[in-house]
Image (cartoon, rainbow, N blue to C red; front, side, top):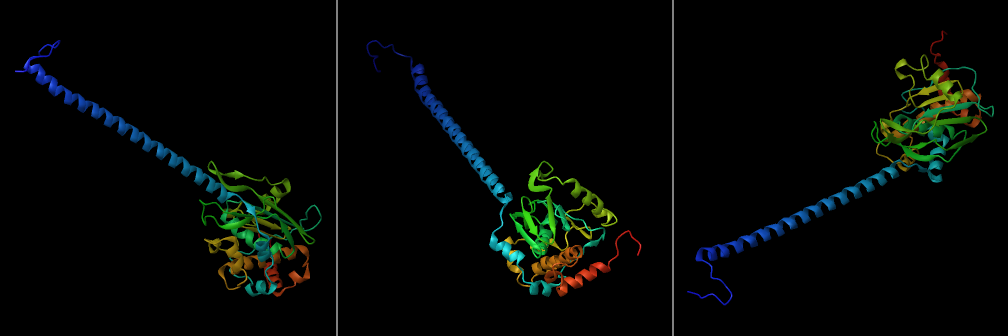
Length: 316
C-alpha cells in the first residue's frame, strides 16, 4: 500500500478511482467543446463565403444586365451597310416576304415644321415587332436622307423573340430635302415594375395622328393602339410588323447587315421587302420625288399596288 506524501490526505480507494475516471470525462468534454467551436467557426466561414459569392454574382449579373440594355452608338460602317444597299439588290428582292402592306389613308398630306411631308413613327425599345420594323424603315428612309446618332439596341429579353437586335431612334436626328421624320420611343427595354421604363411622351400632334389612324377603320379593332405605328404623311399607315420578326433571332446587328447584300437571304427578303413597300408609301407623299428612288421599277410597282387598295371605311 502506497503511503501518502507529507501534507496530503489519503483518499479512500473508491474516491481515488472516481477521480481517475473523472479526468478522462473532463478531457472528453473539453475536446467536444473544442470540436463544437471548430464546427461553428467552419460553418460561419462557409456562410460568409456563400454570402460573398452570391453578392459577387449579383454584382456581375447586375453589371451584365446594364451592359446588355445600354444603347451604344451604331458604327458608321454598320450604318453604311444598312442605308447603302444598292438599288439593284433592293429591286431584286421586290416585295420579298412582306406579309402586311401599309393601309391606305390618303388624307391631305401631313407636313412637318419645315413644310415637308412628315413620317411619324411611334414604338418602344422593348417591343420585338418595333425592333424588326425599324430595320426596314431605316433602309427606306436612308434612300431619302440620312440619320445621325442612331443607337444599337434590342428588344426585351422576356418577350417573344427575345433580344431581337435593332436600333433606337431615341436621341437620333434625321435630315432630308424630301421628307421630315418624327420618331418616338415610348419605353425602354429595362423592366420597371410590371412594365418598362418610360422614355418619351408623344407631342400633341403625334398623339393626334396615333389616336386617329392607329384605330378602326384603318387598323382592325383587335390591333388598335398597336406599335410599331408609322404614318406616311397621312397617305398610308403601318400598325405592327410588316414581316415575321423571327427571322432576326440569334443574330447580331452586324450579321443581319451582312445578309442584306444577298437578296435570297431570309433577312434580306424581310427587311428589304419591307423597305421597298415603305419607300412606295413615302413616294406617295412626296409626289414621287426624288425620281432616282421613286422611279425604280419595284417602287413604282409597289406604289401602284398600294394605290389600288381601297381606303378603309370609305365607299368607292
